[in-house]
Image 1 (cartoon, rainbow, N blue to C red):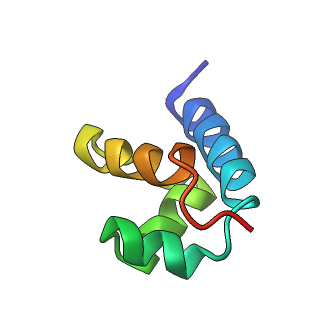
Image 2: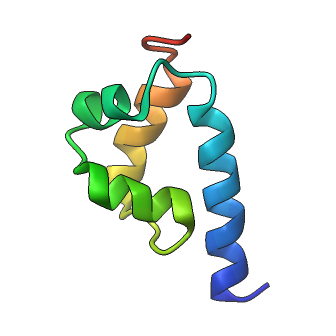
Length: 67
C-alpha cells in the first residue's frame, strides 16, 4: 500500500471514530489542534505527528464527550 493509500485508511478510521463524538470542534478544542489541520487529517491530505496522534487517540479512545 502506498502513502496515499495509508492516508486514506487513516482518514477513514478517524472519520469513523469522530462519528461517535459530539462535534469536530469539541475534538479540536480538547486536543489543541487547529480545525483546518484536523480537516486535512479527515480528508487524508496529512497524517499527524506521533505526539499529535497520541492526543487524538487519548481524546477519541478515552471516550470524552461521546454523543
